Length: 382
Ligand SMILES: *Cc1c(COP(=O)(O)O)cnc(C)c1O
Image (cartoon, rainbow, N blue to C red):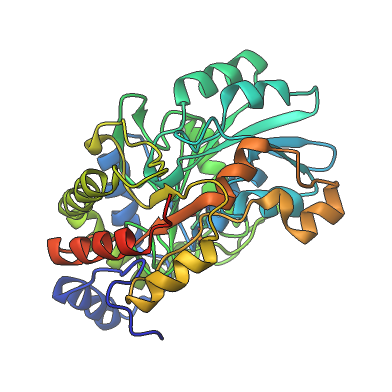
């Protein structure tokens, strides 16, 4: 591990998390059980929805969405290329084709509803949108597009747990919402995730597929229920552990305060970086409280050698990242689906210029000032 002065992310855990984990260990029930059920209930209540299914990670959440919707060979699913590769991989593994669409602009890095609309065919079975960095995609337009074609909208809300926006709570506007609680995410349990669905029947199917579509769970058997089960579908084991759910409960309770600390860092960045020559700060015009602020992205001036800027920042002890190398340019996707450079002009321009600065709830004003100072020093001369 590098000795960063300011890392890109850092999960925040304290005595409450340690005690919650210790309590699970003392309970002698480590796999999915009552703590998970309670975490699901609290998560659903926080979002204002009828239910939620906790899973082992965010990729599992997306895979279950794809499976529960019956997406398979011959089907197409429209999604942004500027995202983590999970959605594309799960759609591909289901035998379907990911159809990559462009993002809206250098200011709005989420799926462009107009480009998504252009890519709809009779084979389109779903649209996946992603709330880049915790900022809402144009859910109003995307939900309308999906409804007009009678297809479901899946929200990859990995960057946005319990986030209220003018479109609604992220993950609850479309048909299915998928969340990740990976160690770098705003709500971090190491590995973990959650699924919500508008239709209770669909959520029940997701719950069944999470555990091999068994008609009787291990917990039921432990409680003295029937010891023989039937299987009424083709599922997987995507159950979370009680340890992860215990961490999730504590993190969920602390989320509002953690979000406020992220917002303070974002205000500082927005204020002190705006005048850099040629900088673009995506989403900067949106009110700070309307995003989960998972990432703080900037776009370098066109033609900048990003690796060189990153090296300079590394020299100052500041870790940076790139979100994301676009899925349509990965070798596996080029080879399987014939995608390539030139397919998505806005995505390709943004991905070459994008740089993520450190952002986590434990950052204080000194950390933010250190990053600002280093970025100003490293910034390319006009
Ligand atoms: C993290 C992430 C995922 C995958 O979540 P895991 O919990 O790591 O499996 C999916 N989509 C996006 C946009 C992510 O950031």
